Figure 1 (tube, rainbow, N blue to C red):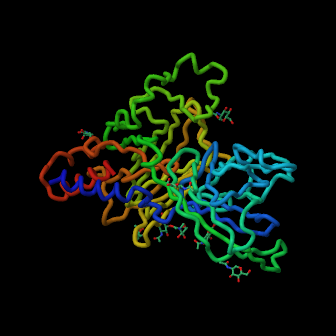
Figure 2: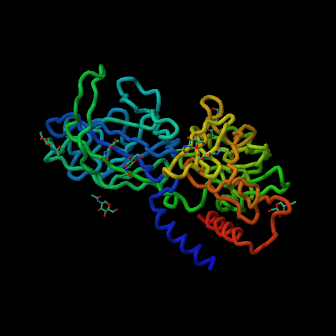
Figure 3: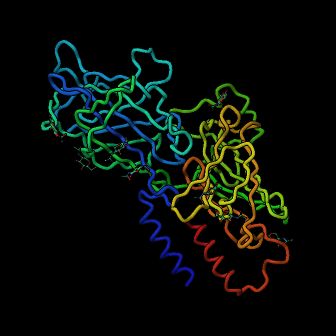
Length: 432
Ligand SMILES: *[C@@H]1O[C@H](CO)[C@@H](O)[C@H](O)[C@H]1NC(C)=O
Ligand SMILES: *[C@@H]1O[C@H](CO)[C@@H](O)[C@H](O)[C@H]1NC(C)=O
Ligand SMILES: *[C@@H]1O[C@H](CO)[C@@H](O)[C@H](O)[C@H]1NC(C)=O
Ligand SMILES: *[C@@H]1O[C@H](CO)[C@@H](O)[C@H](O)[C@H]1NC(C)=O
Ligand SMILES: *[C@@H]1O[C@H](CO)[C@@H](O)[C@H](O)[C@H]1NC(C)=O
Ligand SMILES: *[C@@H]1O[C@H](CO)[C@@H](O)[C@H](O)[C@H]1NC(C)=O
Ligand SMILES: *[C@@H]1O[C@H](CO)[C@@H](O)[C@H](O)[C@H]1NC(C)=O
Ligand SMILES: CC(=O)N[C@H]1CO[C@H](CO)[C@@H](O)[C@@H]1O
């Protein structure tokens, strides 16, 4: 019976999983093209990418945007970004286009390019913050001048087959759709102008498309039981085990060992879980009306600094967070009625950089929660989170029967109905 129900839920979840995150149901990246002017053979467009995802940012080495032209369009020039290849422009005499490929691939410029090559919100190396963390940095933009295209809103053809890598796979983009033209305010904010034509493309993320294995795991401990519940073994797959290094290896003192690789391949410290990231949740203290949790995040990848990291946790008591020490915190309310999810992220210039593996490769904080008299308990592993995400990817939790139990309360009345339901719930959460 248990199996049947679990299998059913699994099926439902997987069918949803294609592009749906229950903790951020309307999260997406929207790419907007605003045609600012027509040219003799085409148009000039401002392309703006807005990351509306609450806790998933685009990290180093940044986004890569692709599309396929509908006709024989070429890119005469770009400001604030560039294509990775020019393609075959041999047909052009005189001035040559920036790119003649049927399916151009565009990347952001790196910070520090000359002022005259910049565009508003460009040149951040493709790094885009999460909306929930910093809306003002959740945008990236560039300008593109297109030739051999239509020169009116009747003859222009929308580009097709948009693809977005951010930086790995995981995003699926829908078709471009003409939407009401964007209104702009002039810099003095006294005049409104309007794009000549606007279209939008919406891309959504799915962890299942992005990778086969999780990229982080969770371990637990508590003040009321000496057991430390470790991350599940091989939580992130053990395929990297051959290339991992021991924490005390001499290799680590070699020059260049921390240099990130082009393909982003990690250099992991050897652990039984083989995850680049471990989140530890320690139930630390019990007061009369409050309880306290310590959260630590450890980086096991010698080739990765995590900038702008985010941690999302789901726990029924997060509706009564009283104080978060040394992380920033923001409640997420995915559905109006439920307020059990929150986002933790680093404080600017203090711990917003999670350093490469090694002595400085961790960040930690403590959270003070007010007990909700009706539901609070240390029994049945209630004090541990139901879901944990690091940088928008779900972390693997330990199996429910290994949680640190409150002494004497566990393993009594094995057939107690609430416990049965609870363990079923945990089973579901675990496989979710
Ligand atoms: C994209 O996200 C925004 C902000 O959350 C939302 O308003 C919009 O409806 C979403 N678009 C789609 C197509 O889901
Ligand atoms: C198009 O995208 C912009 C953000 O880039 C958004 O504000 C606007 O609501 C979108 N329009 C539609 C119709 O989805
Ligand atoms: C196209 O442009 C004309 C005016 O130039 C305007 O009346 C019309 O609404 C536009 N159509 C669209 C789909 O933007
Ligand atoms: C767009 O992608 C689809 C499926 O991947 C493919 O069948 C189609 O030919 C592509 N269209 C263009 C214009 O490349
Ligand atoms: C991480 O940042 C530190 C300090 O900025 C730098 O020395 C180190 O090389 C970086 N490591 C990686 C893997 O980028
Ligand atoms: C959600 O919980 C937070 C405390 O973590 C509280 O500040 C906020 O007001 C709550 N929001 C709603 C809609 O209940
Ligand atoms: C601590 O938790 C473990 C794991 O759930 C359990 O096996 C053990 O009995 C607990 N210890 C005590 C003293 O209850
Ligand atoms: C003890 C306490 O403050 N409980 C509150 C926890 O949060 C819920 C909903 O946000 C309130 O209804 C409780 O009163």
